[in-house]
Length: 129
Length: 129
DNA sequence: TGTAAAACCTATAGTAACTATAGGGTCAAG
DNA sequence: CTTGACCCTATAGTTACTATAGGTTTTACA
Image 1: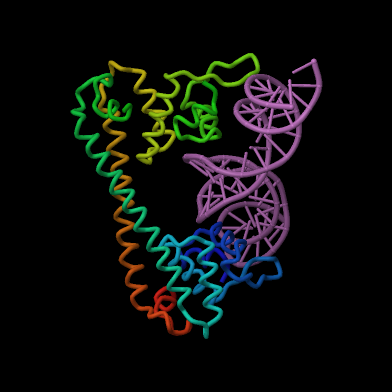
Image 2: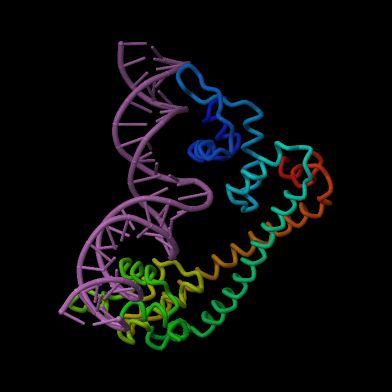
């Protein structure tokens, strides 16, 4: 199949597919005589792997590491686990940050009754302090 | 004070201060004869406002909007409240996403006992599906 | 007074993970 | 044989900075 079809079946945009290729996350595809990219089911699977990783917010660099690890099937999977745990740490850290943000934003919002002037707005006041 | 001192008292890097200025978040400072930026307490307050907003993950564009609103003190503060509520929506949305990520990452990690081969690793298997 | 170091200046490029555009080439249908 | 859909590469834009190059000004000290 050509890139347009791969794009539709995978749900990745054409530019993103080309970008992943450039970044080494997808192997260089066959080409037609007219230089069009030609993909098979294997390519689709590769792309779906990448997509799944991205949906977990794993960075492209880490995805590349995972792909490299996949290509060493007899090695220990501890490094894979390590990477996932680091990802989990990142997620937990960001969640903590967001919780703190949420609390402050809620407090700010509650000090505003919306029919005040900006001058006397509790939100602006708290941002100023 | 010069930019180095402002940087130290505010905790913003020198480059960031110059960047905020370029983006219109800080008013253009006075200059010495030798073209060095000169700041006063007002500038420090402006910068701290920006910093506080950034700590709430408010985008530079929205901070600019807030600054514009601050300069219309008699207007209604409902637009301020609106902006903060949108920010809260963003935070809530991202938190939901992160919760889902966390669950999947935890499940993945739990299927890996770390002394398996990559070939049989539960993590890679679940990423492949 | 000379000079060296520290602080400052502008302009530009790099970061992540894409998206969008310009300016072209290829291919199938009518 | 031409039109439109699809494809190609290369480049610029996005956000919020950070880092660098290459230069100027100020300060401190001998």
